[in-house]
Image (cartoon, rainbow, N blue to C red; front, side, top):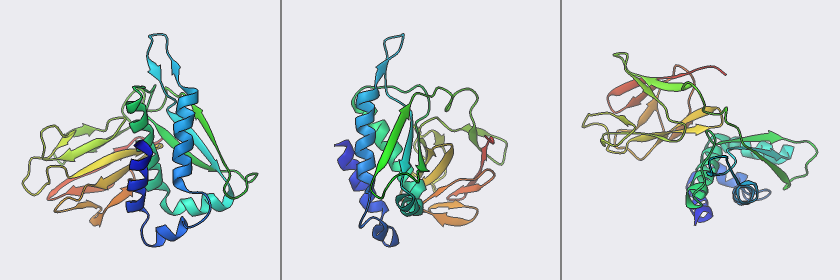
Length: 222
């Protein structure tokens, strides 16, 4: 079910020019399947008896596959991270820190071949929050290690009480060391620096707009 959900999301993501990139060669779902297998083979139990899954994954690709995947890297990493979290939740596994997936180019690999290196990293997402949204009045909304929800619903992580903001307006996803804003089909859309987007990686000091409300994205440099 987890991989089926990944494939469904991927089909919606890779339309048009992106769909051509995945007609041949290494397919994203092959990476997703390997990540799930690595979770099964690398899971462990900590000193408190908690079942844990690796939270950091480095995926090494051939130069050609790496070039193809670069076209949709941000969106693909978001979906791979979501798949890892969904599978871990299904298996009742926790994480030491924020989940990250990194794509690296390995010139020793041929097209279609790849390697996955899982590890446990308690430095990812640990300590002081590294990213937040700032309101014009100085209000600060810290982003969670996982997905942060934005909308009019009272149980949103960032509640915007304005009728021009949808009940479930958008989400901010961690993507490696970065963050990505994802519009949830909101009526008035999500904008970054005045441009309406569906999903886009954020840069420090970007101005995010939800309906009539604007918040400044801030992130500590690594």
